[in-house]
Length: 93
Image 1: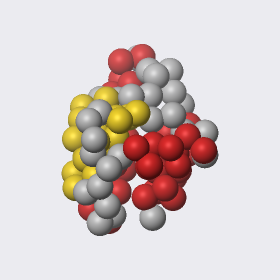
Image 2: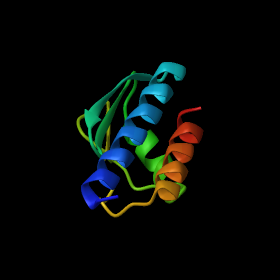
Image 3: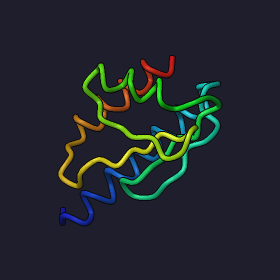
Image 4: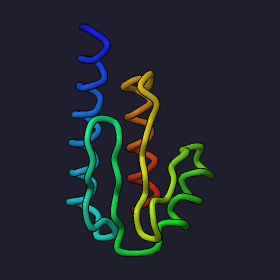
């Protein structure tokens, strides 16, 4: 598989997982993004969620007061993405 195809497959997988998370979590208003650039709009202030994720070694950012920005490197592995989504689920539970 070519590098672009790997990136696109990882982005599609991540988007699916984040949309599922948004559908299950009352704390998430919506997931939006493309490829490996995603945002989760929360129903609350994002900074405490970002801090809790960092304590679990997941580096995410805010993009405004209620949005979490998720922009993993293009070289991220599927296993690393899975771990990141698991951490997000734990933090938002």
